[in-house]
Image 1 (cartoon, one colour):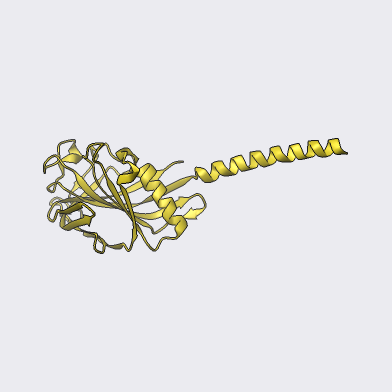
Image 2: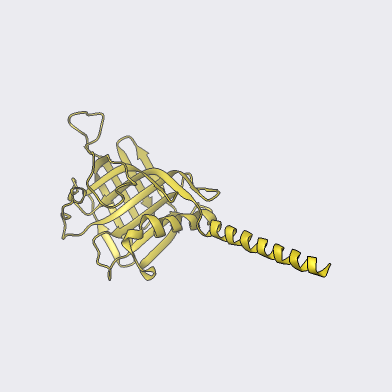
Length: 228
């Protein structure tokens, strides 16, 4: 009897080890996907040369505020539908001076906040290789306005990005577009067509970073990121 119990306990122990190993693997590396609408404002004059593989128009510097509106998303069993994340960074900063600021809507649940931070810090913006001490994360109100010819994002006291699409002359029902873009960052995740615009207001202030890029370039497109 004792011998049977010994084997039984060993079998149970082995089963629990396998079960917990699988569980930890699943929860540590959840399947996730996000898709939705993106718009940004940057340093360049309208008609941003970065999109054609050329140097930025102002001091060879490309600073952006990128707004990701997640229309449909999952992180494991949790929904990320309707969430917004803004990433503000200098795409041309050297490794010893790079930095990034993330704004995540304060209305998100604790689970959603952790999921969004994981996705955007460790995957969407992982190309930037920003050290932890130069990553700023704020959970603040984010206000979004979206119409046919306009996009606007505001984080009160931190960021306001408001831009209007440029009207195309050939087909006035469509904005000026770049199709089949030439841009290495998010090349597969962004739609090949970019709808181009000009910022009416683009102002940002956070710690030592501050700018006014009113009248500069902006564009909008759709995105889809996944680890499946």
